[in-house]
Length: 636
Image (cartoon, rainbow, N blue to C red):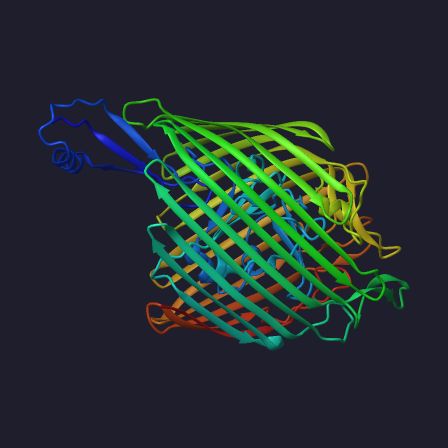
């Protein structure tokens, strides 16, 4: 029997948004032996050479021409942080505005926020914000995540996102049978946290589950001048199932989280005699989120892969305060995403290739308690081409909405490899996002008159890998926004609600670097510059600092003892749209001392904001002071 060369191209199981090296495994001899035994005595068979591609995530041929970062499981655990709040503060271009440690966080990326159209996604499903640009980031414990990917600039719709400045993509944890773990910690503000997870492999597929509980029994008051202590409790649970077949695979996941907390509320702030946030003994807030998805992928032919994903998310908020009538807001999103990819080799050795992806994405949102419903159907097309040192990409999407009409967006990008492990890239494009139902219908901060926001702009960048464990990246960008959606504070009345800014020019530059000096010392420096200006009024967009930087060092003091220090610095910015209330600059230091007892067990002492810098990030809201936590992480 004669068997032709067969090579299998397998991509590593990683998150979307980044290219990963493929490896060709020659199996000719092994397959020949199996085939000879299986069809002994048969006539000689001659087959044509073929290449089989195995992609279990949306395939990407090239490294995307934009600034992006991926934190895998090891990187997430190395930070020692309990949830997304601590991890995302180190990312360039990303601004977090937070009050007390347990409350929701204002989030913007390169100046733009999002209220439910994918600035944060979980397993490809867009998550709702609580209201315009504010997310409960502490709902997503790092113990429950395998990967966090931050993408910047246009073209994010391939990841389930329609956000304009970029997006944050979360992937639920997939545990193997020997990856069982237990994580416990306790510390300041009478905080107790715990999580455990397990994995199981059967003929029916791979199963994973993670459950956890967090309690803060003596948290600080939300109000800046408040004296009352506020408590917080949260339960989260997630599950993941995957099954691979010879020509495809299935993956399903579910995530549940519920938090209940004491909150403060609006009231008269003296002596300025305007509305603000004050102590409220009746204040209670609960937030419950469900996320579920099922994704199937099948190889229809050697160069045709088709996938279909169903997604669902629901966010239910209940709020009671003295000054606000009790309310419940339940937002739901249903998603159906059909995608087809065709990979075409353009040379005998597959070094030059093309990828064409086309499909249709549908999203339906509605608010159960309010008359708000919207549906968007979006045909989309993407092409990628790799020719030697050059790589090109193009995206196009056409939105057809029942509430906000039809809109077309596109993006173009190019990469060029250079000697000495360097490369340069450029991209440009347009974007559009209609308001989510949570932005429109929130009884306190919503605005039913919101218009859809859109932008246009571009970016150029440079990347260098001087050594395998060192990297330097730098980029500059410009974006022009029309009808940008932001939370807007009126300093005269103290009232805050979502609104549109007619036009905003955003210019910025980012630099990321990481270097291992030797086998015991590694460090990194990230810096962001961004200016946001309304050209009509020359005023700045509130909540966007011009300068942000993070400098970290990780040192192996002794063989089992490791120290990590992190310094974060941000400049001042404006709280209000009229630029009359100023937030001061702030510098904070975090520390992590970890002692490894065995290959699977370590104990640690983590210090957050050990400099006790209490400068507020939200007007009238408190900020956590110095806090220390002792923890244990073990595998079994």
